[in-house]
Length: 565
Image (cartoon, rainbow, N blue to C red; front, side, top):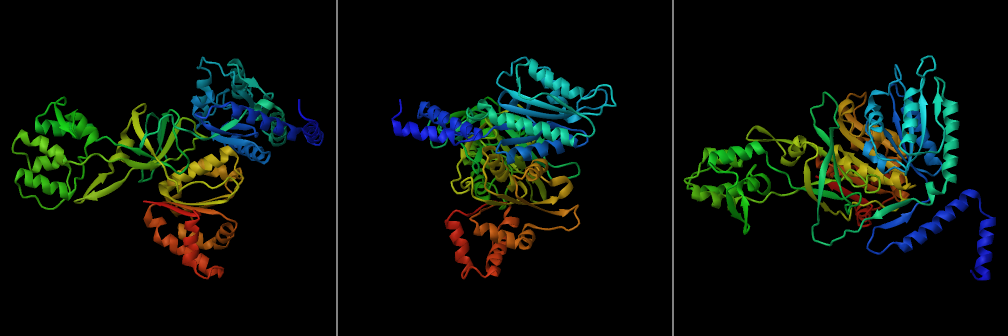
């Protein structure tokens, strides 16, 4: 029993609290009890008393997307944690992880699902496992003048129920005029969610994953689960979205992964053929025996060999070789070895394959057991011959379900501030990757700090990376300000620097409110010239006697951080 003073305090608190406040208190106390029961070795968690729901939409004409976006906006206003995603992008395997799923889907032709929703629709009708953990509601859009009115919505609702999911709101079938009825339905649904204890008090969010083993560089295994081009038809760029399915990984938004790329199999085969070596032939390298095929494929850098190593090769083979960079295959063809005994010496000259770092484009909270990367196929010239970056071309060619080894590179500087702090994100090209992670994370945990994204790319039509997600975040109010800059396919081409100059007043207001400024992308676009533009903005305000010191102070406080490459 409680002592009399404590009991009186609780009774007063209960009597003077609303129903919603009591639900919050219940969740808070339940969370503390659960947290006390978790051993120290497990992941740290925070109790989140906000309902967390995923809203998916399948659309042909755009009505379902527009309605789902309205729903997501309302849900956020009602203090829910919301993930909004089109069914063409939804990972169907995530059904096993969802707690609350809201489906907004239209019906086409003779009761058919929208083209983009077909994989989801078929998956629902093929799976055999149960979805007993899932709570759901379905809204169907259609036209009552057709005989199979809202048939797709009916099918999805029935199949989810058949698989054991719990219907938390009745199916709504909307005709051509749907706005008022649909919004009333959703408002009622949100009220139900706030009154369901399991939708609030039982929900926890991981905020830090503690590795089971402590090593200097822990490696992880993963599978290439998904890969697709982010650029549209007609772009001369190739930028890939890569999803790596893995176990629990210790990372935070802003961190990177290190990938050891493999050399192309056909190049390795050509070297082996030239040297008349069997792939299983073993050589000593770093005091360990390895198959020659493994050394050439995974361990050694055989492309664009440095002038220093070529100079050593020239001395070894007693040949005159001009100062240049060259691939091993070309080197062996043009300046062949005198005999096979020199092979081991050549292998000893070559440098080890170095890892390539890619900033993670996902959130450990929003994308459990999955790492997302944004990879641009690099192109450059050597001796007037076009070449592709080793790791980026490796990703471009890698098939699905390929096993991959990687490690996490921590970035202690490039880190999100507290949830209530505003954030300005300035990105060029694949510099969008960490900010996709930031926005996903803040959206998932319900962070209330303002978010402003400035993004530059070349072509509006073909190169607006993650366009749908960014526009959805803006439409639902998660992105409070959005400025995009393109050089093609728009009336007034702009750059990041020009956008900053035009929005100088807003930039100053955000900084004075305590905003953190993050910059990511190629140095030609986000380097010294961008710094100069920010210095000019601070200087023009007249509020900073020494703008260089003011900018340095922001850097010292961790409020101006750059990741430039």
